Image (cartoon, protein in one colour):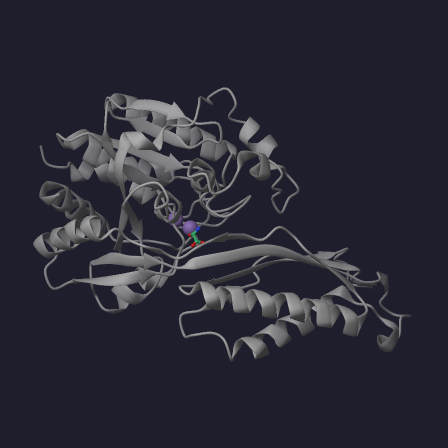
Amino acid sequence: MAVNAQRFLDDLHKLREFGASGVGNGVSRPAYSDADIAARRWLAGRFAEACLEPHFDPVGNLFGLAPGKSLLMGSHSDSQPEGGWLDGALGVVAALELARSGDRPISVVSFQDEEGRFGVTTGSAIWSGKLPLEHADDLIDHGGMRFSAARGRMRDLAQGFVDPNRFTGFLEMHIEQGPVLDTNKEKIGVVTDIVGIRDMVIEFSGQQNHAGTTPMHLRRDAFQALSAFNSLINDRFKNVVSPQTVWTIGHVDVHPSASSIVPGQVRFSMQWRDGDVDRLARMESIIRASAEEIGRAIGVEFRFGQMLGIEPVEMDPELRQSLEDGAQTVAPGTWRVMPSGALHDASNVAALMPVAMVFVPSINGISHDFAEDTSEADLVIGLQVLEAALASH
Ligand code: HGY
Ligand code: MN
Ligand code: MN
């Protein structure tokens, strides 16, 4: 039985309604929010209608389990605070459509907190054994909520962890979240490998004081420390990074954040990504040394939070080949192999079983923004590539 493209699109649009925000297809559905939990409950119902056993694990990962051994497919249904309707959701709904339209056993998963409200791809990191649950429970989001309290919001649904040995491999379809396919007017990206990531919170603590009476040379201004730190690492990274290396200070909390007060404390996220573990380590050394130097120079204390990280992973050659065959069948001449600069649950699942990923284009390369979008025609091509890959594998 062939996939039902309209049913697939209808479920994607229905899922978008949970946390619909901003303009167009924007979504705000952070892990463990009311919208996220409602979306997972709805997905569980759709899994049951597809004769898949809905199963929530202790951290909110939602599985739709086929009996016996099966191929696992899926992604995540939580979003960034300002996200799009397709990041993660596409992979979950595509997996559901393939599970309910095909005749081979396929289980479906929507991992929890892939977007790292608390950690980095938290739900699949815990399920894969990379992040011990007792460590995860101490993680705190930028609003000060503990992971243990957040996952407690789903305690009425929680069952045990699913045994990964029931699955033969993992396939994930995802939007590219970058400009390559869109710029080159291509329809499909078969992923070769996923970059590694490091992520931690850094704090500078100086002296809060009056913005009018405190001479500049006597200040221990925590924001000035961050500003000097950022300039220093940008300069020192020049000798280490490649054109593919990225680093981001995405969250900054200035305290007490008042116009007439010299900031006494700054707490910020420091995240960096690359395909080379040695380069990630060298960047970490520069970050730690630069924070210490700035601390001494400006007279502020510095503190590093727990560093989270995921190593770069290669996709499974055999599963990847089936995706390439599917792409060649469905989209000849308009597909390419490519690395992933975005992190995905597949990075963690690769520790348990063979994994592979396929991308569809992101219009204007936009993602992690309400404007994230992909044409419905391209979404259906991605679904058909997965269907063709399964037929040949
Ligand atoms: O940040 C990432 O790469 C993923 O979209 N969470
Ligand atoms: Mn994602
Ligand atoms: Mn994302």
